[in-house]
Image (cartoon, rainbow, N blue to C red; front, side, top):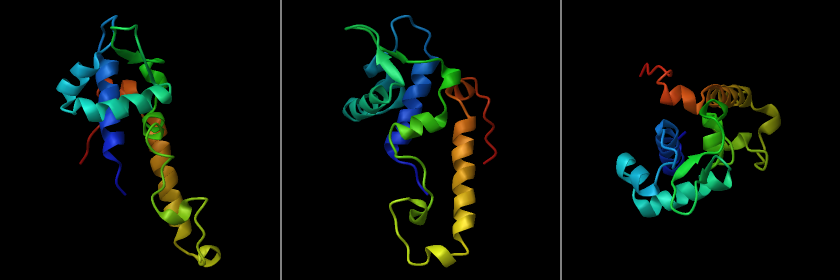
Length: 138
């Protein structure tokens, strides 16, 4: 399973915004420079984050700020700004029909793994990442 570039860059942009303490928010050009994301590509990311109501623009010449506190934004929220949920295998998608669905011994395994990933994404907040409270064991 792979997460899209938009999701990964969106997470980086959100960390950048959450880490900034300016009353004027963070300018898009500063996010692009600091995170080494092209401004054109960042336009798409910013749009998705705004549509998902995770960020807003502070005035005409202001930058971007979080729409709610960082401790109330989960990684799952950010992922859902770019992806329609998490699905590790196609057969778990409700719109997918598999002829082996009723007798598949592996479906429970994939479903449990999918739920573990979703629960992990829901358990980590943007504040946890900003405060570096997530251990990296890899």
